[in-house]
Image (cartoon, rainbow, N blue to C red; front, side, top):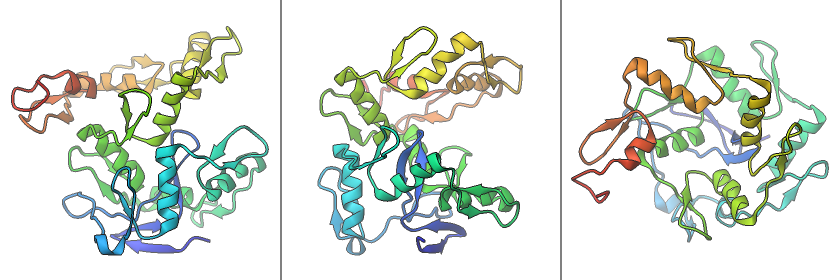
Length: 270
């Protein structure tokens, strides 16, 4: 069992994983939010193992080795029951529980069981209400540091995972991995109705709604429904929320694409 540590009022599990974008493995960084919502950075001397690609530092060499697979896309741990492969052995172990149905982590409050201790940890916040990570740009809060850091990139525009074939860069390693399928010409996900193929499983799921007519995302203000969750930024038509702000001039926008297209007179976007 991974060692558990109590930090900043939230329970983090050292060496445990979260999940972003399906089965993508994300190491839960040992980061807590301060009063201002900014993540606390560790002292460099405590983290002597530095990535030569992005400069991020780690306390253990094993963490650095695992992190470097985000840059080189190495996934040496392969499932013997399906084509999926993973960067770490623990992620493979968790994935195999999807096949076996094993759920060894049980909530003492309600009895619900999970295949990962990190999923149990997040579930427990349903009972406690604890959401440790506070976004300094908008009212959103997060249970996992990995989700918090990914969300921050929605505001800052940081894309630390560049493609080595084209100028594009991405906010997380799983998006980069899926993008590389475009260059390789891989479309492994095929529609069973019309045989159209896709580079990503999420695109296939969204496409299937054309055939099924499913529109699962409903605006709570007007009742309008959508096939994609991203369409719910429509809600900002009602609330007036403009969470994406130019750091130079302070002008705000309803979505990231408008911020990207904005020609700020005070910064290098001109």
